[in-house]
Length: 185
Image (cartoon, rainbow, N blue to C red; front, side):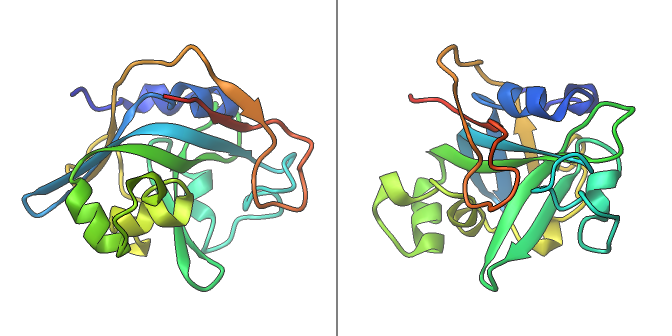
């Protein structure tokens, strides 16, 4: 599999969110390989996007969103879940990131089942908190360069043709933006 290069992430955040569909998220933990096809994403842009963590100002939590594209932005939410994003934006944009909401598991499914303490594969990685728990993605992975890190990266895959576009999930502001992208396998 070919790791996505930095230039892939140097585009409009919404476009990268669409383009990530069908790509493969890969996590290596020791000799264990976990992977899955990305099937749902959401775009979060800068100051013109009130739902974005970077809408107001740069903070210790969101500073990765203002940095180099292709880096992981991981944050802790609701006091119990991690969410995994990849920084993606045009060069002239101040900030932006794509939330990886769901994957279709491919490799390491038994390991993911153990991490999630469930054997219901359809419910294994169908949400951002479930995905990070299954793949052991935490704040330790925040700011990793996904274009160069052998333990967490995104590889090329087949682009789907049946993309579903709808409002983002679990937000109270910016709900008018149709920046959630997914597809059915």
